[in-house]
Every structure is written in structure tokens, then in C-alpha cells.
Image (cartoon, rainbow, N blue to C red):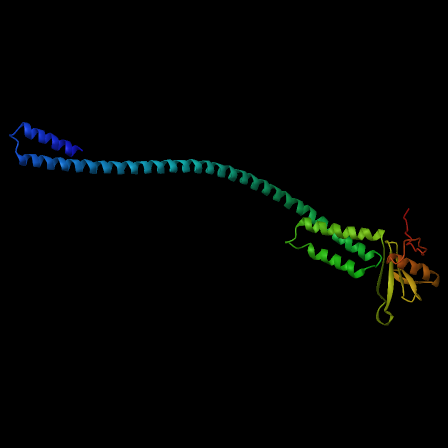
Length: 256
């Protein structure tokens, strides 16, 4: 557009002023075209620079937004770290208190196991293998570092509860009585912790555990049927009923 206008202007000048030569006009036109191309190139560079500037501005805005987001995140992380630090301090205090408690409780728990062993040794000798195995498991459990104090205490209380329940139940089972040539299979009957009886399967021999002499003692034939009935009730082969059994108590000497 500019070249066309310039050509027109020069043409007019050529008409008005005949002094200007054709060579001069051609040179002027050539210079005009060069200026036009230069202007177009400059415009393109300006447009490219403008696009680059816009891209850089967008990148800067995006980077600024990310920086603000990271600043907020770092603040949250800082608060979280502070809270975790306080929680760790609380855990450490609880751990210290737990260690002090364990130092005080562990001797008492060991004593509870020792008392249980003494009690089983002095008690009526029923279910000897089951009770001995339970006691041995507790004794092996106590020194273990991989078992928590709470679990140890739970197991001790469980053993005490089982022993306590024996005092309120009626139980019958088959086992071996005697040793060597005197060993025979009998039916045992436990009445709470009060009495422990036995009877041979044919009913010809009956007896009970004498806690005073710490030995088995025979009973006369009059207890044969009452003992058979009690064993059947304990095995839930008969409905509950009154039991007519001899009770032998251990006489205790009371000091004045």
C-alpha cells in the first residue's frame, strides 16, 4: 500500500517536475520497497517478541501461583510436624510411665504365678495334666520380651478364672488310676473343689481322694449307685437331681 502510494506520488512529481529523471525515480522506488520490506520484517519481530512476552508472563503467573500453593503447603506441613512432635513427646511420657508401671507390676505377676503353682500343688488332684500344662505355659510366658505385659496379665487372670470356675462345676472324665500293675481305668467325678471320687467301669470299686492323708481311700458298696448316678448327671446323660454322696472334709486346727 505504501509502495503504491509512493509510486503515485513520484509519478505526480515526474509529471509536475520534468527535471527529475527516470533513473532517479527507479532508485526512489527501489528504496521505498526496501523500506517496506524492512518495516514488515520489524513488525513480524515485534509480533514474535509480543508472543514471547505473553508466554513469559503466563509462565510467571503460573510459577507465582505454584509458589503461593507451596507456601501454604509448607505451612500445613510445619503445623503437622509440630503436632507430631507433641504426640511423640506424649508417647515418650506414656512409655516412661509404662516402664515404671511394668517394673512395679512384673514382680507381682510373677508372684501370682507362684501362688497359682502352690495352690494347684495343694489342691485336689483333678485334671493334673491339663492344669500342669496351663501353669507351665504361664511360667514360660513370663520372661518373654516379645509378649506385652497386658497379654501376660490377661493370661494369668484367665488361669485364675478357670481355677475359680472349677469350684462351681460338676465334671466327670475317664482316666488312669494307680501305677504299674495296680494301674486301672476308672471314671473320675469332681464335685466342685470339695470332693474327688473314682469308680471302676463295672462299679465294683469306688473311692475318693482323702485330702488329709493325701491318698486315695476306698468306699463301701453303698455309694455304688449314687456315684453312678452322679457321674451320669455330670456327663449330661441324666437330668440334674439331688446327689447323695459321702462328703469327707479336712479338719482344720484353729489356734486359740
